[in-house]
Image (cartoon, rainbow, N blue to C red; front, side, top):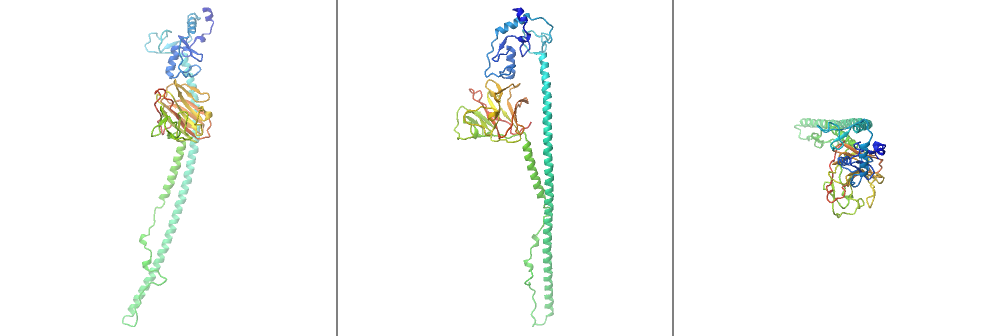
Length: 452
């Protein structure tokens, strides 16, 4: 048997994780085998039960019993394999290790394979280079967008300035015409007053000339029928002219410009104010007064029947919807064991049974019971996360057709859907079932205005 085993390829007995011959191997439902210790460490690290080789996610943690046949064959191969100079060695990275750096296969302590480290770093280099390409594309798009936005703003400001100047000049001409009209009225009244003054002097002279002559009746000046009496003339003390009438024009123009800038900022904003919509909530859901938290309860509430309400699955939508632009919000999931977050079409089916997938208008990420993360495509796409997120960020780029999810604490990208949107989209939340109280914590919209 030893001679037969020695003819087998060594990679048949190598663990995918540690790249060494199996020690206490276990075989999981997908058919792949690993060292029991390596697999347990991997699942503990990722907080998820999935195959490290094919990435298949298991709904329940498989029972890990040692594959005795594979263990015996591996032990025999280890004993009888052909001797050859080692290409690479596993070394212990524990400080002050008594093995002097070389690993004893019977010792279970922190170890790392040099070849695997090299491979991981090469892969990291490729990912970094790809990230640079994405960065260049994003920056070029932003430069083009900034040129468009600022050109529009400059043109609008120049146009607004021309309108302000024209309005000021028109106001100036209007005030000048008003002054000219007032001056003409004053000149007419002055002329009339001088005429009446002359009549009065003439009357006084006539009175002097008739002094001593009782037969002559003294002339008494009076207002002629065509003349204006002084008492009927305008009270010019109440007439004034504004010498700085153009401030309001400039202020109004600036106000209009600020409103336009605000609209442009909102259009470019990567932030969103999100409130939950009670009209869409399943009857088993409880919503906080500030419309920022939702939790599953163990009873159905009496709620009005509404065509927008989910009647079978414990889901809820936001009050807000988006038909253009880019938006970002964060959801605190904490230690919950089940949840779904994302965006959905406004026209989705909310009654009866349906499949959560993009074809039906759902672009969502979920944590399933058992610790498996999945992007709810058709079929679902398992997602391996390095660190269990306590906050999940959702970034919607409607125009580009992207819905992305991030781990807020680690700042790590989790998954991105790429599609095209025609309907308005609502943020979507499902706090999951109670699971005997282990999942009673709420989903919390923790960010009203954030940007990345």
